[in-house]
Amino acid sequence: MALELKILSTNRCRSLLSKGMYINHGLPKGKEVAGEGNVWCGKTQTIYGPDGKLCDIEPCCQDNRKCYEP
Image (cartoon, rainbow, N blue to C red; front, side):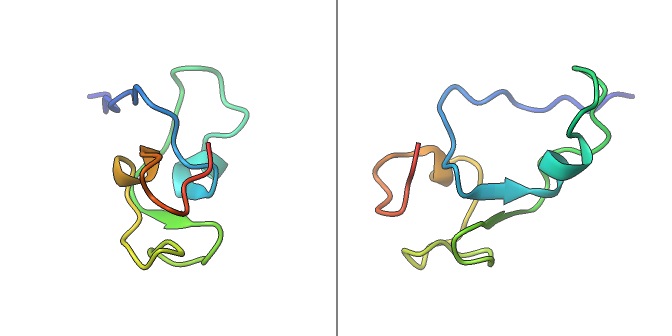
């Protein structure tokens, strides 16, 4: 059974990182071996952004966060 990932309609913050970004790099489209799963902020290297709020895919796709970078 293939895992379907939700496609985001907005741009996520450039500092939002996930394990899937590294594991899936270079694989053909549709051949992902890991989903988004856990995310963290590249600026703080924790699960919290510079604004003190929890990092997650949807909140880190909104330009109303002070730390958001397109």
